[in-house]
Amino acid sequence: MTEWLDDLGVVTLPSGVTVRGRPLGAAATPADFTLVLTDGTMPEWPHRRIRWPDFWIPLDRADALDALHDAYRRAVDGERVEAACRGGRGRTGTALAALAILDGVPEGEAVGWIRTHYHPKAVETPWQRRWLRGVR
Image (cartoon, rainbow, N blue to C red; front, side, top):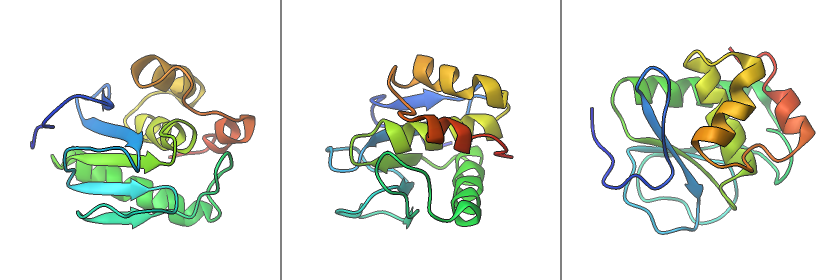
């Protein structure tokens, strides 16, 4: 498993897998793979963009779930995986909550779990909370 060079925004999921959340424009040590949840400057390392408007939910649920499953598999395999949006809270928090669900956090507990372990304002809107229903 490749270790993060710093722990800013790094979340350890219940299984011990680590992922990172951050604002996309913030200076960051390299990741191995980034889920990009906004427009803007792309990281220099491998990434995949999910079309996800600010304060909203992904435009294509199937594509978003495929990307989240890919990111989770990469993290389980030891890659440094991150999710990043403009502010690093709403879309990023929702993506991290989805990764926590994939890791075994019960769906109804994922928002509280990610707010405790990542940022107290993660997952900003009711529709982002609803979108997490059925993440598998």
